[in-house]
Image (cartoon, rainbow, N blue to C red):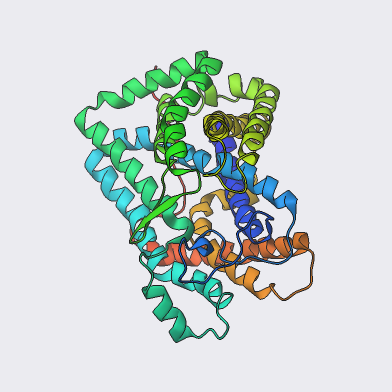
Amino acid sequence: MSKSSVALSNLRAVVIVIVLAFHASLAYVKSAPAPQRFDQPPFTWEAFPIVDAHRWLGFDIFCAWQDVSLMALMFFLSGLFVGPSLVRKGAATYTIDRLKRIGVPFVFAFIVLSPLALYPAYAARTPDPSLAGYVTAFFSLPYWPAGPQWFLWQLMAVNAIAALLYALSRDVVRDFRRLGAWAGEHSVLYYILLSAICVAGYAPLAVAYSPFTWGEFGPFSLQFCRPLLYIAVFFAGFSLGSLGLDRGLLATDGPLARNWRAWTVLAVVTFCIWAGLTGLTFPNWDAAPFATRLGASLAYAPACIAGGMFMLAVFLRFSRAHSRVLDSLSTNAYGIYLVHYVFIVWLQYVLLPAGLPSVVKAAIVFAGTFVLSWPVSIVVTKILSGSFALTSKRPIWTPSR
């Protein structure tokens, strides 16, 4: 593997660790809403299945930082290999492979894993919980909660868009490759352009619906303000990956890696601007002045893109060597993402009566989930795999100039 491929593989491994830490911390944030009945809209238990009495403001800052850029970065990383895969397989075969790799695990997640993970949310809100009562309450909901697996169906959707574009014109990969080459030569302008596109896709929806409004239809959940932003960053990954992992922005001696300090400062500054403006909208977004809501909405996308570029820059600069632990984590990251939420919620539930500081509880939840989900993910991967793989072993993409 090239140095850039190793760096991105290591980043993938660390991203799944951050996902575990993020979900492990959610029960202990000070801003978590007060627990409501399991059958009471707007069903805040889906985002906060367990709300512990022990909380710490530091977790609010950590979770806010990750909420700004983590999911967008996951869509970006998912887009990196789409161009070469389409060229290699063709649109039809690629779509079928995506249905196997993403669609089948999504169905397994919302049918099996989600009901298993969310029982503690019901038990914590019911004086005398029973399995029969949970089953009745679960199937009485106006939708089928899928938990964090909403990411999978949206990822499938943007992959389908990419396949459709390629089916309509095979030149689409060439055109995105040119954009990737331009980005490598104009990294600052690329950041401004991508941020502007994401602002246009995010801010009007955030103002109209708020950043916190979700819609559900069956197992399909959608955060109203973010789908266009996720599409934009996915195709940003598409363009850079189509150029090649050792070229342009993604080169280990490229403008991201060379200027990692500047990207770090930019990420911190833009996050602080967004956090400051968003803080002014609390505790009620709808009651906040329009100018404040608009400012927070406009500030989100630049912070989101800067946060992702900061992560890319740091790993391209400092994490270019193989590690057996990171290699294994990267290979099994998908499976860990699939199963981790079951362990997160149950461990948070078990620790509810414990008189421990919130930091200790979060550490126990994270460590327990990390230790349990890694081997379980390997087993689940083998069960679901059949003729396809949930693990990640992808070829290096080095197109001719």
